[in-house]
Image 1 (cartoon, one colour):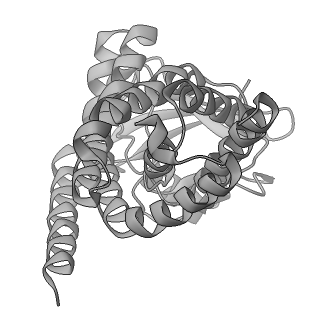
Image 2 (cartoon, one colour):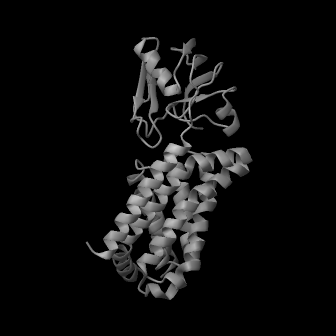
Image 3 (tube, chains in turn red, blue):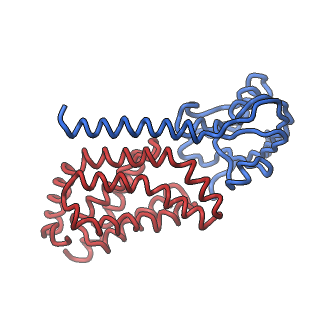
Length: 175
Length: 144
């Protein structure tokens, strides 16, 4: 795939994340972004998915405005992307394994954000933020698990077929 | 029902139980009894300072009392049972038309509420408990 087509793809995938995030914004901690990153990893190399995660955060900043959460998203989503690629050889295309990882990630997300708050505002803020957010971390974990269980296989089939058509190569080439 | 659906429903039920349990256990408990609270509303047209005595446990309950007594006209968004409780949409005539997009919202802070000081931020009106002598300052602004 040539460079221009690669950048067009990265741009569209970043916007796709933004649309998915915006569509479910009214449901606290229910999101498709974690699942979409898993799906992107099926046909993109790590470097491209990391760029997508950074562009996604920048697009969100343009939509919602600058806040301390932007700095958090700048490192927390890349952590998820790296985790996905670490587990990719183990999970392959097993929806159960991805659902489990995604659920654990949902539970872990709030902790990472509390660490982020701890660095910015101090240890007591970190503890308060984490404790107050535990119930929402549970929503995040359960919704991630269910959404990934239900949607991984059908979406993976569609997205890999489209990627193959667009890229002109097999998605497995990035395993 | 096949095995997959049984598993998903089980996770959903377990998650709901854990969520409700965590919400119940972690919800701040209010302090009973009479309290003297000062509300400072910073705004060029509706700005005022209110000193009130109340038995309300939370800021949300206090606003309900003030609304009923017609001392302030309060507009809430959402419901008490929402995960974050109700949002403070408007005070008197200054109302945020769209709580999702703003561009300006009512925010509040307190220099002497234990929780606000300890955590570095105040909670939503239905979670923000009151202590005798608390001073809350409300301002209407966007996120910068």
